[in-house]
Image 1 (cartoon, rainbow, N blue to C red):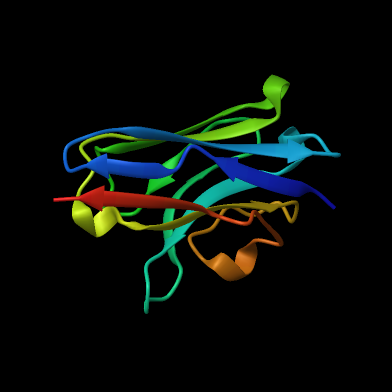
Image 2 (cartoon, one colour):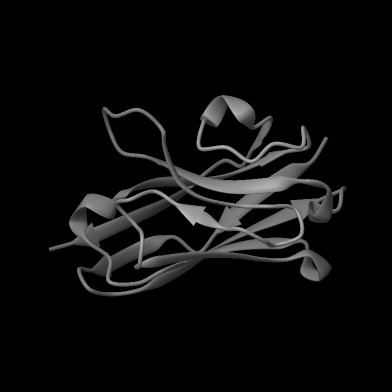
Length: 124
């Protein structure tokens, strides 16, 4: 089992940037395919970005393509989400997720481990 802890959320004006981090404890992140999801009030949790175990083939939701970048540093046991040109509709709680099942997916049901979430609020 792996415990995930997100950080880096906050309040930012539209057009600004934030970098989220997700640190794993007790197990090496290199064992897991990872992803970021987000959940706005009253909405379903939705896929944002995913990256494979060794860092290859990242892919993104259409809504964030070209603005967000997912990356990982397995030596530091940390997953990142660089968010640029933020929009008010990006406001949500952001979660990192991990799976050891050998799949990389846009579906939240493919992921077994979740962090507690970090709030991102973008003002207009």
